[in-house]
Amino acid sequence: MDQSSRLSQIVDQIEKRGSVSISELAESFKVSEMTVRRDLIELEKISIVRRIHGGAVAFYGRSFEPPLISRANKNVTAKQRIGKYAASMVLDGDSIAIDVGSTTIEMAMNLVGRQNLTILTPSLHIANLLSDEKNIRLILSGGIVRQGEKSLIGDLAYLAFREIFVDKLFLGVGGIHAQIGLTEFEMQDSQVKKEMIKSAKEVIVLADASKFQQIAFSFFAKLDQINHLVCDKEPPQPLLDELKRNNVEIHVVSD
Image 1 (cartoon, helix red, strand yellow):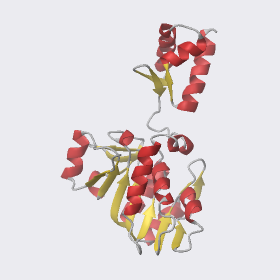
Image 2 (tube, one colour):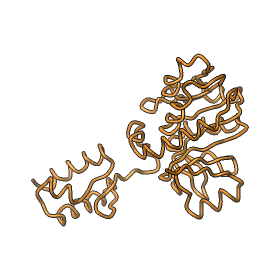
Image 3 (cartoon, one colour):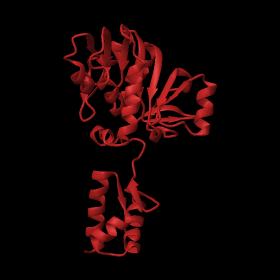
Image 4 (spheres, one colour):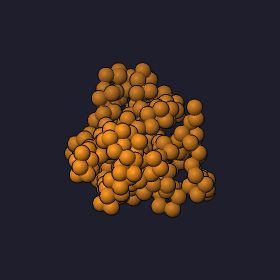
């Protein structure tokens, strides 16, 4: 197999899996590991992959949002723990807003069967999960559907959060950084999040450790605008220090 064919197949695997192993590629292509390393160097030069020890991962720029179906299959156990814990923070009778995202979907699954809740969301996935719950008053924000993510954006979404106020907001993030704060991949989703934050008494961020010290494309909040962080590991020291300085309560949900 020539190099062009190998590069094409490596790109296909990266897009499907998010990462590749040098040893697996060498065995699959019947070439040496050194040959595979040279292939990965070529792909890294054109920003398709980022080489790591033993392989490579997809090179995602700050403005590229991995598809929801792809994100939902990563760090699954951590997201399930975070989602379950976040749901336990909801009291019967609460009014809450739930953001879009794979971790907030896990949270919503744990609200099935709960009593006397009012839930406002811009997520069609979450609305579908909870639409048959008789003891939950479910409100969709309205707006334009963003395909793939199945989130609602635009003026109608902004208006909903300007006119409805909730006890707690459960928020997903593209990244959480000590100096920058909270960021997201899509500018219109960021604008919705800004309005959601203004509508809530308490802001609770759900983030697995892969989001720590990451910066996505669009800024939407400073660390002093959030009250709680629910995560699967303790944040690295620079982020931990800034969270504590801003009086953010950290909930580490370990195994």
